[in-house]
Structure formats: structure tokens, C-alpha cells
Amino acid sequence: MTRTFLGRARADRVGTPMCHDHWQNGIGLGTDVLTADGALPVEYLTPGDKVVTFDQGLVRLARIEIRLVPASTALRLRPSVIDPEGAGRDLVVSERQQILLRDWRARAIWGRPAALVEARQLIDGASVARLRETGPVRLFDLVFDDSQHIVLAAGGRYRFASARMPATAES
Image (cartoon, rainbow, N blue to C red; front, top):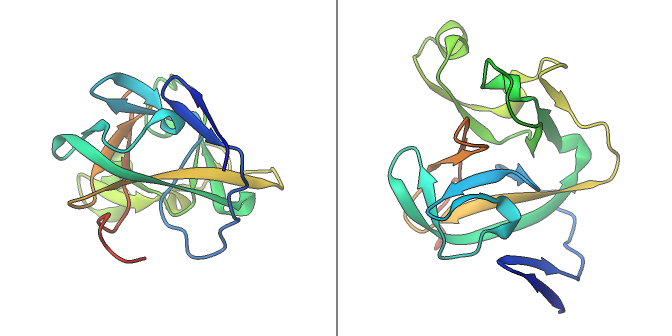
């Protein structure tokens, strides 16, 4: 395996196998994740980094799982999904990525002030839509030792759930 190191970034030059199983969470290339060192693109994170979480503050990242998934299982989120101002750029996530909503939708649809929902439940064809690409999409899932956490991304505007299982669990 050949690796290229660019600062903190690592890129493997071997193919990542296409994942056709029931892939759950995953955020796309270039999504900024808040860390103790500031906002870093998800692909720059390494195990041991301290990630800012909504539920427990700084938590050590155990590992990052990277998978290629069919584009048909990924969604594009426009900034207006969370930020009424629409600031920022589009993000790519797994259709099953859990997002913490704390706005009128949580109350109107789920009857709660906050709801952890899968991105596919928000598809409207405009602000949340399936990707039109045909090739595979690389998604990153952040895994912590102790439990699932709500990770702050895209300047803190998005709150994504991390992996559903602890790092020590068998897959």
C-alpha cells in the first residue's frame, strides 16, 4: 500500500472496495468537522484527534471508516436545510446519516423540540436531493470508543450522529 502524506492528510493509493451493505452514517469529502485544532475537512482527521461534540464536548476519535458507496445512496444537502441564511456550501451525506434537527420541523413532524432523523426523511428535491452522479461516492464515518456522539460540522451549523456502534464492537 502506498500512502501520500500531505500535512495531516493521508490518501491511500489503493482502491477502496465498493460497499453495498446497509451502510449507515457517512459524511462526504470536504465536510469541515470541528476539532480542538479548529475546523478540519473530514479527510484530514486522524485517530486520536479531539472532535467537538454537541453532547460531551471534546471526545477522542478512535477511528475513521471510509467507504465507497453508490451515488444513488448519497444525498446533497443545501446549507438552507439547517441555516436559514443559507451560508456555506453544499454537503454530501449518506441517505441514512442521522442529523439533529432543532427547528420547526422537529416540532411539526415528530412532535418534539429536537429530533435525530435520517437525511432521507428530509428529501424534498430542492434543499435535500439525491446525487445525480453515477459513480461511487467516498463517505467517512467517525467512530468513538465509548458511544455515539453528535458531531459538529460545517462551522457548527450541522449536527451529525457518529457511528452507531463503539469502536471495540465487532462489525
